[in-house]
Every structure is written in C-alpha cells, then in structure tokens.
Length: 434
Ligand code: GUN
Ligand code: ZN
Image (cartoon, rainbow, N blue to C red; front, top):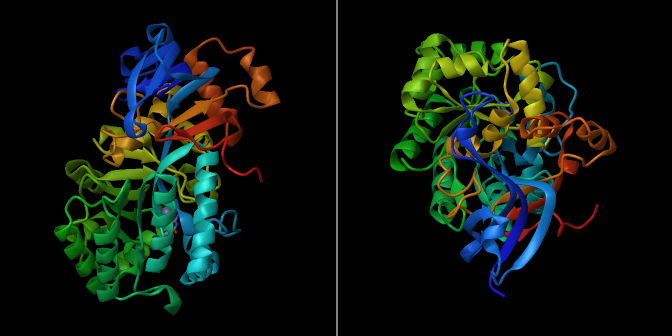
C-alpha cells in the first residue's frame, strides 16, 4: 500500500471570513478524504468517494472534524511552572515568579526535561506550530530546537535577550545576546522545520546598547522572524517612557531600532495610540493578542475590530505562563468574551480561521501550514465536539458547522482533540498516558 488516507469531515480556510455567512472563505467536505503523500505533505483533498480504488490505508475519523493544526504564535516554553502564579499585575508577576523560575534554565538537564514535557502538552492540545520564548540561556534554545527536531514540528524560537531590569543571573550583554542569537540562527534557522526568532524580551529589559545590537541582527537577517512584547500594561508603558524618553511612545522605540516588519510578532499590543496602530499597519507588523493572559494579569482588552479598522494584522496566542491554558480552543473562548466586552461580535468560523490559517499567515507560514490543502504539511487536528458529557448533551441541539465550532471553542479543550498529526504522523495517540 502507498500512502495514507484520512477520512472525516474536513474544514479548511483559504482566507479570513468577512462575516458569519461567508462560505467562500472555506472548504467544507461532509465526507472528505485527505491523502498524505511524500514527506508528510498533503497530496490531495477531495470527497471521499473520489478515492475509491486507491491503494491506501484508510484511517476513519468520522464523525469528527479534521482541520489544520492549531498555531500558537506567542508562548514561553520556560514558564510551564509559572502558570497560575498569584500576582496583581505584569511587573509584580515577572519579578516575583517569572524571573526566578527562568533562572533554572541555566541547567541544560532542566531545559531538556521541560522541553520534552512542553512538546507533549502542545501535541495534547492540538498545537502543531508555535513561536516560543526561551530563557536568556542559549542552552534553553538548544534544548527547545533539539526537541522540536525530534518531533519534526515547525517552530519559531529564540533565546531572550535582556541586559537590565532583571536579576543578574538572567542578564546577557549586548555582545553576548548578539553572538548567541547569531550562532543559533547559523545552526538552526532553516534546519528542518525550525526558524530562529530574534527575541528581545521587551524594551524594559534591553539597554540602548542592546537595542543597537538587536537592530544590527535585524538588519543582517531580514528574513528572520522577530518576537517581543509591546504595550501590555500601563506601568510597563510608563517605565518604557522613562527608559526611552527620546521616543514618542513604546512602538516608536521598536520602530527606531528597525524591528517593525511583516515577520515581527508583538505580544499583547493592547494600549496603542492611533499613531502606534498606524505604524503597525504600515509596516505589516503583527499584534499577537493573548486573552487568557490579559485577563489573568488584568492587563486590558484587545479590541480586534478596532485593530482591523486601523489596518493592523492580528494574531491570537496563549502566552503560557501569563496565559492560563495551553488550549487554543480555550484561548478562543477568552478572546470571544474579550470581544464581547469591546462590543464586538466574533463569529465562530472567523475564530477558527484565526487559530489556524490566520496565525499561519501572521508567522509567514501559510504556504506550508494552516490549511488542509495539497502541498501543505499534514499538520492536522481531529476534533470531537462531543468529547465530554457536557459537550455531548449540548451537541443534541447543534445543527450547523458554525454552532459546532462555537461549542468547540466554548466547552472544548485538550479533551476535544481526538488526534494530532504532525507531517502526516499521528502523534497524540502515541504520547505516553500520564
Ligand atoms: N513582558 C516581558 N516579559 C513577559 C513575559 O514573560 N510574559 C508576559 N506576559 N509579558 C512579558
Ligand atoms: Zn509573553
């Protein structure tokens, strides 16, 4: 037998829906087949009946829904043991817990253990790609990329650069941050499915000299992604104003150092002025909203529709460990509620688009992942909207795809992920049961 054919209901987006009735934005096959071909890429997607006679092994996922794997464009792999730390707000949370915990990653054995657990957790939740922050220690990024390579997963990551306003044990220097990031790029960027992200933690923890070194990296590697934090919390914004008084606002600091560009992911970006939004829009930089984190730390509400009106690009992420769930479905639940508080009505199919194709576009990966289409990697999730007793009884009242998607985001979590495929291989069912 050659190849493998997945059977189930298939949903895949080709663009962001313009509203709840925009069926032109997606393909939905009631009884579809996904043929997996060379190197774990999708060879063909069609009605199952069109595959009759094909010499392939059929894996029947009916009645479940097969979509692209979820993508999490902002997550801290070094914060697995920070999740749920009791703090009033961002800076207290960073100083009291996060900057303490991250010091443990000086130990490569600890980094390797957490990296393995981290990838298990992503897979369990149906997340097949992510943009991850490692600690300041280059060895933590080594551990991350080694584990990602073992799992054949498409990942962005970078060692955090930080040389002030944090404990001594977490400080690098402008030179060291530059050298270690460059060495990571040379070793890992483009190796297998890995991409190295230039990762200044945020303007608070980088001196002017370090920002210059980061600007040099960004110039030297124009295709390499960038990730950092922006405008999450009012005290943080005021602190950046004190540290960089020569700049008009927080976004202008990053703009000055040449960090605003299409593959640059700015976590949070909640409290932007009209001018800052215009800079984001003009440069194609991406705001990555992290709703469970923003609610947990009381940071604020990201207004998606206002960002849309400003022409900004938006993505959606967990921000573990400020965030409180690894599940992109639970992230959608929180995002929906945040939009409600902003008087925005986010329809469930647009929501599902955001965590699949939308996040793939944000990371510049839409040519490879984010949809169920020929040529893309078979990075997929199989979703069971009746995974729990509460979901099962609610399913009795569900009569449309949009309602099913809404149920998945409202009550769904890792239990609703029946299987996760990475490059055509089933990986969730292979995890050791814990
Ligand atoms: N700003 C700078 N570092 C962090 C972090 O680790 N988490 C969050 N949520 N915000 C940050
Ligand atoms: Zn973060």
